[in-house]
Length: 206
Ligand SMILES: [Zn+2]
Image (cartoon, rainbow, N blue to C red; front, side, top):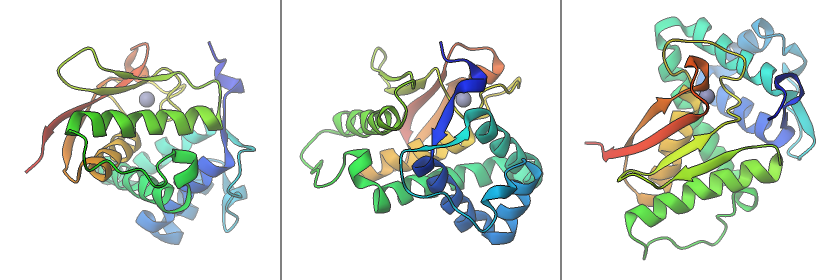
C-alpha cells in the first residue's frame, strides 16, 4: 500500500495535464487554479517532459478539486474536457510512453481494441511510477479500467464519484482505439469509500 503523502506524479504526466488544462481553460484559468491549489510554481513554468518526480499525488488531487470548485456546476464538464485533451496530448507527444507508436488496430474487434488501449494507459502509468496499481477488469460483459492508486481522488472524500478527468481521458482513449464514442461510467470511487476507482466502458453513444 502506497502511503498517501509519499506518492508522486512524474513531470511528463504533470506537463500533459497542465498543457491540456491550458488548452481547455485558457492561460488565465490555468493560472487561477494553480494559484488556488498552491501550485503557483508552475505559473508560466511547465515541467519538462521527463520521468523525474513532478508533484505529490495529493497536490494533483488538490488541483483537480480546485478546477471543480473554480467552475462550479461546469467543473465536471471542464475536467472531462481536460482529460480528453490530456489523452490527445499523450498521443501527439508521448506515443512511445503510451506504447502506441505504429500500432494497427483496424483488424481487431472492438473489445480487443478497447482492451489494448486500456492496457496501454496502464503500461504508461506503471512506466512512469512503479507504485501504480491498475488493471483491466474483464470479468463482466463490459470492460473496465480500475485503479487503486488513483491520483485524482487520493485523500479526497465525496458521496459521488469525482474522477471526471479520468472519465474524459478513458473516453478519448477508447474513441481513439475504436473510432466510436462510448459512454464511460465511474462505478466505484476511492473518494466515496471504495477500494479502487473503476471506469466502465458502456454502450456506444449516439
Ligand atoms: Zn479516483
